[in-house]
Length: 252
Image: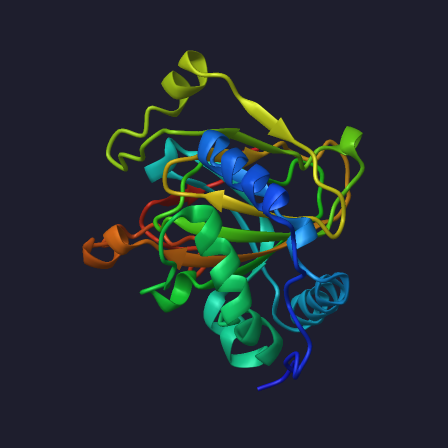
C-alpha cells in the first residue's frame, strides 16, 4: 500500500464549544456544515497531495446520465473506492481516526459506522473540462466528509447547491419538483475547505464549469444505524463502472 499514514500527527484541531454548537446547528438546519477549522492545515495539505498522486496514476473518465436521479449528468474523472483503499494508507488512516469520528458524531448526533459497501467508502473526483458537473443526486448512505482540495474561481462554476430534508425514490426521483417547491442553497468553497454533508436527505449537485478548470474533491462516506439493515441492489454505481444498467450515454 502506498501513500504513508499520518503517524503520530493529529487530524483534528481543538475547537471551543461555541464553534461546535455553530457547526451542529448549521448541519441539522441545512444538511451541511463547513468543518475546515476542525481539520489541521497540514493534514489538508497532505490529503491534497495524495489525491493528486492517485489521480495521476489511477484516474478514469466518466461521461454519462443516471436514470435513478432523473438522468442528471456525471462528467468528471474518478478514482474509485477500492483503488484508493488499496493504494493510500493516508486516506484509510484518516477515515478510521478516532478523533475525527468523535467530532463528526458530535455534529451528527449519532454514531458513524464504516460504510458497508467497499465501493462507497471513498471517491476522488476531478472536474476539468467545460461543462463538467456532478448532477443532482443523493447518497445511498447517510454521511459524507468532502475535502475540497482544489477549487476553481467562483465565477467559473463548481459551486455546491443543496436542497435539504428531501428523500430519494430511485423509481421516481422527482428532482424538478423538489427544485420548484424548495429554496436552493448555494455554497462556494475555496481550495482546502472541508464540509460535512447529510447525503441521503440532501439533494445536491455542483454547478457545471463554464470553462476548462480544475475542481478536485475527496469524498469519505459513513453509514448511519438505519443504513446497516437496508438493501442496496440498484445497478447505478456509475463511479465504479461506467456501464451500469442505470447509466445512459451522454448526449451533449
